[in-house]
Length: 491
Image 1 (tube, rainbow, N blue to C red):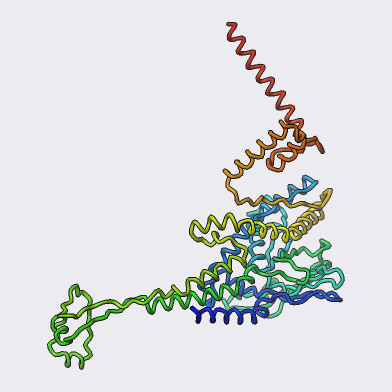
Image 2: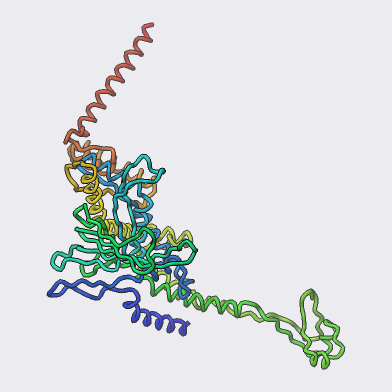
């Protein structure tokens, strides 16, 4: 146990020394001048951990996908709200038509730290999209293709993107050709340059930017003012994944070596034992020929006197590592702010995890939503501006508000019971004349989504008028039932 603990501590020390270069952890800070740390996540390493394809992490990186997917699943996608109904409808329809790409935007940003979305308006020449003459395309750029994100030294605003990608194509003879495509995108223009084997119909070009802004949105995970790029959600748990892999590998290797029991024979007369059980008449000759004892099919062994047979069994090879593996597991849970039940542990731990760890996870989800809010609002402004310019439309405002689905660890029964207690408490307070009717309605409005404000505002009927209208309708229905009953009795 002590040996493996020392090794684990040694591995953590090595990782701690090397992780700055491996992952690009932010070390710069804003000083007297404008400085911005431009180190980036090792995107290939992050993908290997997520997909569990790195050989040095095979037995530990299985936790990575759980951490990322659970966070993305609870974040969900926002709904746009705007004072302009046309703008609100346009944005929500656009997001719905690109729902899978929007989901991958969150996934890539959390997994790799950065995700770049490039909006382009293109004509639909395909017969599959005859219902849309032109549409805004939602393009996700692999982050390693964004070579530089150049910013204004005073405002910090992005003034130019430099993109570079490798392209492989085949000529008419089937020979493989390769080229490098470079792009420089600014507010004024988009410059394209091809190096290497130039594909047909692709030439160097300079395309004017008709929008007046760079239509690229950078989604960053764990936004930091001192860092130009985001951080992967896997950075904080990468050392623990490595330690878990090493511990598990050693335990499995020990189990394969020692878990198979060995037969122990206690024999005084070897010649008699061999003769009685295996038909060997001359033990010396049997030994010279390299004879081996084969117990396959031997259901009975004959012994004499105090002779006996037993099995030698090693202790559990994973026994000494279990406590340390459990410790590393909880380090992963704590560092990732992910409830342990998401990793699939047994029921008692799951119950404890929901009650104690879920509030922390909800805070993490809320923080991620706020981190991405600025990027979604910027994307919404770009969609509205591109639509307004291309289709000669006008919108009252480009300002939008994001509405996210509430994250609640309670089930429907718990929610119903809590609402019942709240209504009973408000009813008692009203009966005791401790609060006003307006105060009770306004408080209950935050619990029931279908309730309106107490007073009528901006043409939206207030809850007071709705209550009065319902009381009048109920009285008329009660009166009609009474009149019908009296008529029946008179007959």
